[in-house]
Amino acid sequence: MLDAAVGAGATLVPLPAADTIVWGGADAPGELADLLVEHGDHIEWVQLPWAGVEPYLDLFDTSRTWTCAKGAYGDDVAEMALAMMLAGRRALVRYGRSTSWRADGELGTNLLGARVTIVGGGGIATNLLALLAPFGCTTTVVRRAPEPVPGADRTVGPEELDDALADADAVVLALASTPATRGLIDARRLGLMGPEAWLVNVARGAHVVTDDLVAALRDRVIGGAALDVTDPEPLPDGHPLWSLPNCLITPHVANTSTMLAPRLAERIRENVRRRSDGRPLLGVVDRDAGY
Image (cartoon, rainbow, N blue to C red):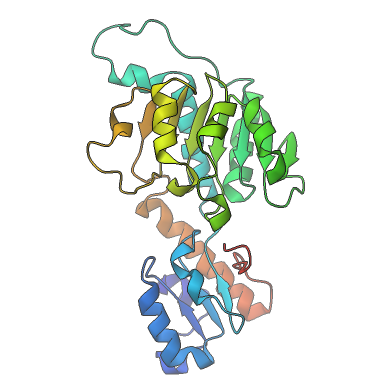
């Protein structure tokens, strides 16, 4: 982070002389709050490291510009979402746990030509749409502001979420975490999905009501779930989700630290250059929307 900022033309100074904070404490809002109490009168811009900003919601104000890394990690996370869809549709979850040749028979179906609904219209969605293009999928994006998303066959608003779930072969959650999206996928909405549909969550665990998902997977209400995030997180040892044969879990690694470093560095470099040039910054936090 330091090399990226200085390399883009920033000058490293003690906090009393700074007008910008590039913050690396991803889950340390209290420490940042203390710094702003002491030095906030001359801090004009704060750059946060992650796309998600939930820990910092109480700090956002109108006296300075807040930016985060939303959009910076979209291609990494989209790749994970594609891998999870393929693993679910082609039954790799079941086959991967088998200990006998064709113990489960012949399973799986194509992603080619599937109907895919993506909930969220940011960087993950746009990157995933590009990855899905060779598969000939019919794609629907559900987003807060239903302007058309490039690459999507259809873009709709939140009021059409139920309809978008009902005809999907795969549903990908790629939206920001806000009070309005907590528990978005519950028993009723899982029931709208088809019995072969897979739910892929690469956003936040709180979007899904976990107990409802466990019941839906046990009762084969949906085909399965692939989760890079869970609620609670970390998912405790012995939790029912671990043992369900139609559930794939990865430990929030859609973009690892190794993947993250160059993406974050590039975002910092670009924003330092933009600020020097007087251009709009990338990843500006929408205080009202909460991301």
